Image (cartoon, rainbow, N blue to C red):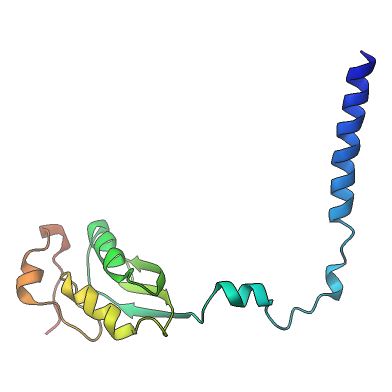
Length: 133
């Protein structure tokens, strides 16, 4: 029984010691005006943009997001209500136009590029949208 008490006290002491250490660092003295060098090394320069992409349903969403996730794109989210694709990408690796061309290649019109009629015709019936002229 004495051994159990000693173990419980030791665990409690370790737990309390680690919590109090975490509270000892004074964050108010940190310079938050510039990002840390570790963050800069892990991330390249990224750009966030939204582009209009026509579509209708969740199938469209999956296809549009998959087509836009090329090398250099870290995030792609398409909203079927607003028809906006929000991209986070590295402009040194990929251009916005190249992403839009990939999307048009799978059958969806973008702000700048119209999908080929033959590719659009192959979309599921639920994915067919009113095309711009």
